[in-house]
Image 1 (tube, one colour):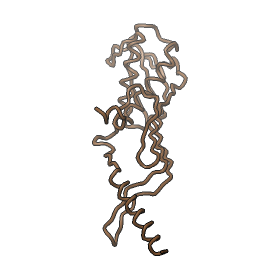
Image 2: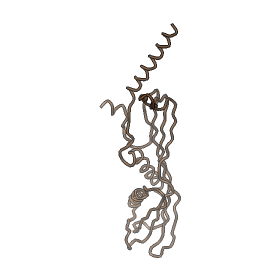
Image 3: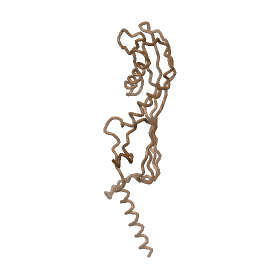
Image 4: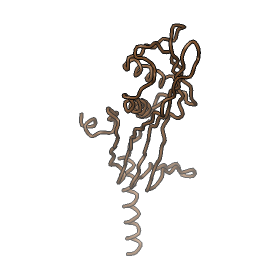
Length: 207
C-alpha cells in the first residue's frame, strides 16, 4: 500500500512537471542592441527631465544661435544631444554649429542608462548532464524591474570669446517598467511608459 502511494505521488509529480513544461513560453529578449523597453526608458527619462525645466532661464536671449556639444560616459550621448537640441529649438533657440553661433551649450551627461533588479521564488531551469532532460523555470513569484534614469546639466559659454555665462541645475528624471510572473504562467506588467509594447498582453493574445 505504501509503495502504491509513493508511485502515485511520483507519477503525479512527473505529470504536473510535464504539464508545466508544455505550458511554458520562451521569449527571445531582443534581436537588436537594445530592447524597445530599454530604448523607451532612456528616451522618456530624457524627455521628462526636460519637461520639468520648461520655465528655467538659460541666461541667453531668445532666438540666439547656439552651438551644441554633448559629453559623457554613455554611448547614447549623441541621442541625448539630439533630444536636447530639439527641446532647445522649441524654446526658441536656433541650433547652429557653424562659426556664426553666438553661444555654446555644452551638455555634460553624468548618467544615462537603466538599472535592473530581479526577485525570484521558485525552481530555476534545470538541464541534466547525465540524463538529457531539461525543465523550464518554474516561477511561483518573479519580478523583473527596470528603471531608466538620466542626469545631465548644461554649461553655457559666449562665443567667440568663450566667456562662461551660466551653468544649469541638473536635469534629472526616471521611468520604470516592471514585469511580474506568479503561479508559473500568469504574467502582467506595470509601467509609467506612455506607449510600451504589449508583447504579453491578453488583448494581443486574443487578436
